Image (cartoon, rainbow, N blue to C red; front, top):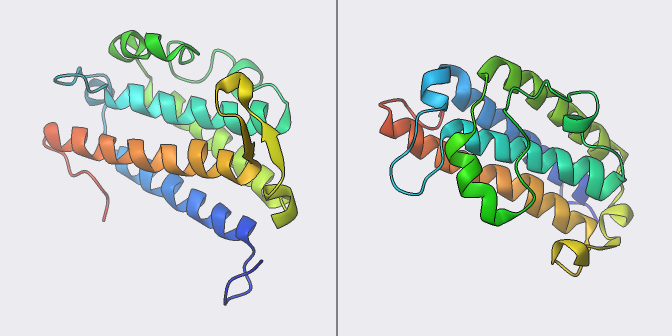
Length: 180
């Protein structure tokens, strides 16, 4: 399937993922380590915790779930993600993690670029037929889903949602949220 411009579904999804990556990274340009790790009011996480969640989730989804490879955070970037530790697998532990996670913004951004490059390489290898393949995600509680669902949910939408939360938190610190 292609759109009016001849782009495949895989190419369009890749463009959308690239856009949210670019928006997120532009938003972080003026975020200091102090702001990144500042506690938020109520139940919100810190900017650094949301960033960690976005990157680690994408790394896990693209490398482990979709390709059966070790995520970068346990292979080439083990100990070099810029985050204190990976996000716990148990969602009931996320709030505790979020309130204690710290990040070295520059190291985290190096890891981010590696995650994005790995995602881009994977996306470049996909055909529309491959996107339509079904995967057994019952061990994660999601039953059977298409490969495109994993990418649109755990990469594209997850990044977009949390980028919005980061924009709001930046505003709470007197910074401009979105870069546009």
